[in-house]
Amino acid sequence: MIREIPFTAQTNECSNTLMGFVLSFFWIGMP
Image (tube, rainbow, N blue to C red; front, side):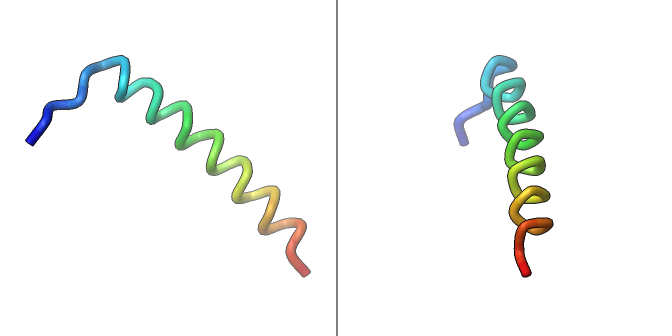
């Protein structure tokens, strides 16, 4: 397995938070 570097982990965390915000926005916007 390829080991994730701290930069990738940090980017993944930021992306995960952004995705959570977007998902919440879509869920609120859904009828």
